[in-house]
Length: 122
Image (cartoon, rainbow, N blue to C red; front, side, top):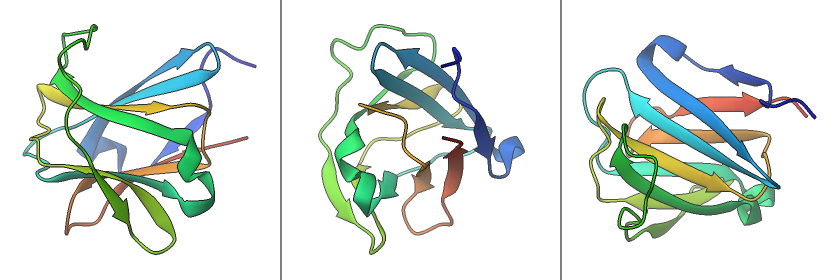
């Protein structure tokens, strides 16, 4: 396996992302290039819901998240499921998505607006 999963972003100029592969896990950090995502939602295909462990919000320059885990609300969006947060995600405050394995895709962004997508090749 390579150090980085191969990813295909949708509209990559509208958001930034970093991938942090971990031993048997993946952290995906996402943020808008401008504006705010609030409330924030992250979903994966329903069949892969078990891969989505948690989501946190923290300043982009913080690598340790001891106090950054936030309350989340379960989201069911038909073919996708995940978490929603009532925290602002901004160009300087990112969302950290924690996955136990790499899913086929992750959708994220502001509730009520078209979501951004990161698709991962197997």
